[in-house]
Amino acid sequence: MIFKTKYILIALLFVSLSFGKEISVLEAGNLDASSPYGLSQTEKIVLQNNEKLNTFASKVDQYGVKLNLFESKQDDLLQKLEGLKSIYESDSQSIHGTKLRIQSNVNKIEENTKKIEDLSKKLDSFIVLQQKNNKLLEESNSKLLAIINKINSEYIKKAEFDELVAFINKAPKEQIASSQISQKKSEIAIIEKNTEKQNVEKKGNQELFDDALKFFNKNQIAKATPLFEQLITDKYKVAESNFYFAEIKLINKEYRDAIQLYKQSMIANDKAEYIPKLLLHSAIAFENLKQEENAMNFYKTIIEVYPNTKEAKEASKKLKNKEEIQDNNKESKKDKESKKDKESKKDKESKKDKESKKDKESKKDKESKKDKESKKDKESKKDKESKKDKESK
Image 1 (tube, rainbow, N blue to C red):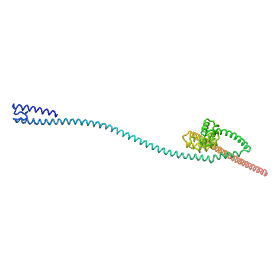
Image 2: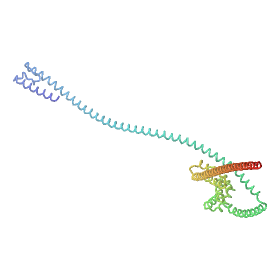
Image 3: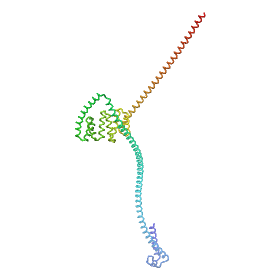
Image 4: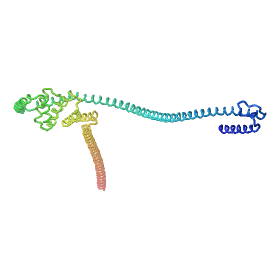
């Protein structure tokens, strides 16, 4: 619009000049002269207007330059604004991404906090359970120790006492014969043992133990026996040697010796991995010796102390069978007692019936006798009266 105004002013200037020239043909009144003179009033006005127009045109040019400069600066500012907008959008996206990542991290922290709380609760529960298990283990160990002490204080002494009593109760001849046979057997055993000992002494204890274990696993009991005896004598691997020798005694049905060896093994190492098996086989040995109470105690100990083992399952099965047998025996005993009570009651009723019948018969006899006596008295009285009547006649 500024450019249009400029063109209009220039056009007016030319019109004014044209109009001025028509006033005078001479130099006077020449508006284009550097110093116009002889101007009429109108020419003066035109000259002033031209000067104003020139001044205004000059100002318009200056404003145009300034406007161009302003437009250039405006373009620069717009470009800078676009750049700032682009940076802002980029920063906004980056900030949004950072915000999302922060939110994600906050969510993860909340999840981890919840997991930590859950783990803390589980840990507390585990600690409580572990304390209970420790307490149960201590109680079980106390029970086990009590059983072992009982075996030490009572069972072995009783076994020795039983053997002594059996020996004393034998007849003298049997004692002599038995002692002679025993002497011969011991002599043979000594010779065999010395021979085996000579072979054994040539080997080290570790090699002996490996050989003994190999023979035991192959069920070559006769070959394994002297090796374990030698190892026990040398006190080599006391716990393991006593355990495997006890297993041999159990196989040979030497239950008392087996229990003694199991006891020695457990005293040497009560944390060995075969302890559940040792306890189970001890219970079986007690069961075969008809010591049911000891057997039951051992079965219960295995279930309490080693609940997740196959020996505990077998002990549970045997204990259940024993309890069923006991229940059946109780029921059988109860049935017998009930039957006996019924028979006793029946006998009492029968006796009572007999007594009642006897009383009735006795009463009947008495009544019959009384009737007979009464009849006899009547007859006697009648005879007397008849006799009296006859005498009177």
